[in-house]
Image (cartoon, rainbow, N blue to C red; front, side):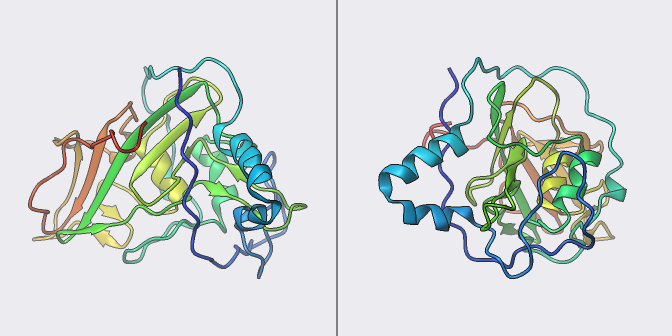
Length: 251
């Protein structure tokens, strides 16, 4: 039986995204306008504890139904170089929301009203730049508008908190990849670059799956239950993580 997803930690206020055009991609809800807070959770707090718990159960647990942790198949073919709105600067990288709706179709992902429950697995991602840990932020892939008329959405791949845990909660079986998650985050990822850090003499870019070097395209790393991924640029950390302690998370 699938375990309930954890409620996200309250985020720091951020500026709501501003779309470059008014054309709404097919099947994707509108996002909040300039100057509105994107965090529906702040508004929900005013409903009182009982109503808040009820709403959070709907939002963060999703529908009922059988769940699987089995993933078989190959990575989807996606042209990651053409995704709009990717961060190509230095870390840290906050979740990029302004172009997120426009990235979903190219990423072969969906805008969901609630988190899916058919395929429900979790992974952990560590990113290191010159030996220093880079935070994978909270609420990647979770966009909630402060205006109820505007709506909000989940993506199959998202984070609840800044722990580095990736939540893969899809309404149907399929294959999902690290590249799709980083694309939802809104950060450039290729065999040569992560964000604004590109491989150069003395500054290698390396990828690891469960502590073992991965030499292929990192975008095509297929996500499996409780995998540990590490992206390492420049000077490596003292130890490349090979596992993650899932006990405290309850996942």
